Amino acid sequence: QWRGVIREYADRLPVTEATKVITLGEGGTPLVHAQKLSELTGSEVYLKVEGMNPTGSFKDRGMTMAMTAAVEAGAKAVVCASTGNTSASAAAYATAAGLKCAVLVPEGKISMGKLSQAIAHGATLLQVDGNFDNCLDIARKLGEAYPVFLVNSVNPARIQGQKTGAFEVVDTLGDAPDIHVLPVGNAGNISAYWKGYKEYSAPFETTNGTLPAVSTKTPVMWGFQAAGAAPFVAGHPITEPDTIATAIRIGNPASWETAVAARDESGGLIEAVTDDEILAAHRWLSAKEGVFVEPGSAAGVAGLIKKHAAGEVPSGKTIVITVTGHGLKDPQWALRTEDGSDVQPVKVPNDVVTVAAELGLE
Ligand SMILES: Cc1ncc(COP(=O)(O)O)c(/C=C/C(=O)C(=O)O)c1O
Image (cartoon, rainbow, N blue to C red; front, side):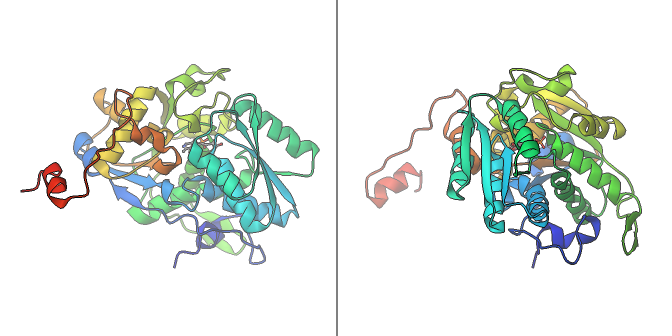
């Protein structure tokens, strides 16, 4: 029985036997072999399907640690800024911890699925007249000046929890992949994966002894941003980020330094993909691999397809792509055809013969 991220990796996390663990069973997500992407690239491509976490995104890995830290600090209320998934996760884990939760989201730029989760869990949700970066600025000031505990990924507990994604990849594959690909927004996740891969590839000091290295190497990190919200590509913050992938509609990443370190220390890259490429990858996953993700989650897959088209994906390698959020978070995109028109439902009479004919059955 999977016991949640903290209990499964306690000897590599800043917790003790006495820590009261707040968990909803996060982690232990599927590593799915992507048959069609493997055929396309000539490498073995796997998808780390983080939409299978309790609130439907990778944020739960970090939130179990952040909410556990909030309880340990005696907090009564937590706050976060979010493009949606962090707020959904914070609301659920705050409920599990018995804490009040305030979430700040950019007005009109949060998907219905994520909004419904924050409301369902009773969070106080404020739609700020601004973008995510404005929300994060306010949340940080609230955490500094008021008795609320900030659970955004500027809180190191979040990065500690999210590094377990890398541990699971190595534990499943038997070693680190050659390339790890993922979307980049606020850049906490690329920073966390790099931290996890580095820790797992070397002896790890703990209070009761040294843990041996688990992997023989670290992967090259490939991050992908939406072209309209690509500060790492521009080399500076973007004041008016814009993309249909609202999850990664972020112009001033909080984890700038650690993301640049992950890119450069690993010999990797952070590049951009267009909204059309993101939507094409979103459809590729649904139609060819059987995996349903929200658009922003597909940015890594869009990047791999783009790099392959440019002849820059090596064959014969092992490649892992983290797909970060479930498709149900933003189902409108699956109900729209490639030309943007709505998918029309097919209506049939209540009659098996007509239905059989409609299905082309003899
Ligand atoms: C589906 C999905 N995919 C990728 C990202 C980018 O991860 P980071 O680069 O670690 O920010 C997010 C980020 C969401 C928020 O930042 C938020 O919820 O406030 C996401 O929801």
